[in-house]
Amino acid sequence: MPREVTRHIKDSVSNMLWGRAAGRCQFDGCNRLLSRSPVTQESVNIAERAHIWSFSDDGPRGNEGADDESLNDLGNLMLVCHDCHRKMDNKKDGGRYTVELLQSWKTSHEHRVEVVTGINPSKRSHVLMYGANVGDQAAPLDFHLACTAMFPNRYPAEAQPIRLGMVNSAWRDRDAEFWKIEATNLDRQFSDSVSSPLARGLISHLSVFAFAPQALLMRLGASLTDIPDIDVFQLRREPRGWQWATSAPSADVIIDRPTTPAGPAALVVGVSATIVPDRIRRVLGRDTALWTVRVPSPHNDWLCSRDQLRALRRAFRQVFDEIKAAHGQAATIHVFPAMPIAAAVEFGRVRMPKADAPMLIYDQVNERAGFVPAITLGGGEPQGENK
Image (cartoon, rainbow, N blue to C red):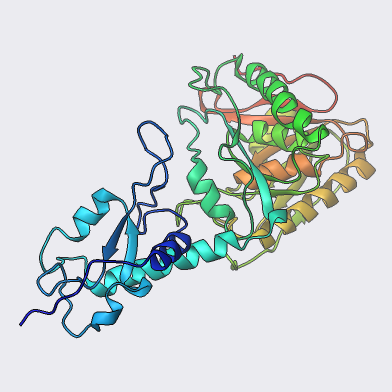
């Protein structure tokens, strides 16, 4: 004889379910807000309470072996949207939406809500996203992926990021006008969107996500010099994403110095790849004083941990001081970079505008078969000569 189980769910159980779910759909990957119409944005309850074990014997997933008294309890209920409720209960046996799977989703969602709502308000961070074309490739910047990378150490202070950069720009880094246009736009947007709110006390921490040519990343970093509380993130290829690894194979950074400081000072940064000296001497001449910051095995994904980034910062600061001591503060440092995103931003941040020598950053332009001047840090306006 079929058991008779009521559909009635106590108000106290419903209230607890809403609280545990934070008013969002608990179906894995949905997370829809259930207190607002997705069409009109009006406040309305669009939530449904779904049973994991069915309240009836012949319902989806059944209830054989389940205690009648617990079928309408909190542990057997999920807060879901209508669409996900239909998916879960579409087949009589539940199909691939088994009891075990739904229980794991419910547990995971409620744990995430508990962790997120327990974050201290001091962990709020404004997300700064800067993008510019790298060759023909546009910037792959996604706010939700950025938020995932920040969690659980930080969480976004606003529902939208601070976005810098030219949207749908037709300019490419091989164009003669590219560097001046992009650098001027970056400086103006930074002043309006970052410097001004910062001066008014509206920003206390920044999480920086960027994708742009290295010279522009350094320019961005130079703008961030006076902001002490910043996290800079690195876009990794494997695994794809912005999350830092908890450990790295090596944080060793090597500084190679010239035998004599005579001639123009060239600083080569070889982290993502090796730059052979002849490429530099073709630009500056045979008497170039070559300084190098490098890692033992350069490759695209070498930078994967915060420890490695800290090691690079220390090396940058040290080599800046050594070059200034050897060549004088007025001598321009010619910079030839092959480094990851976060390293380029930190390179600019480490430079002290009033104490360090001016720098001329070069960019590799395949159409010119070599390096060309791109942007200056200190000592003048940005310049592009890749005509």
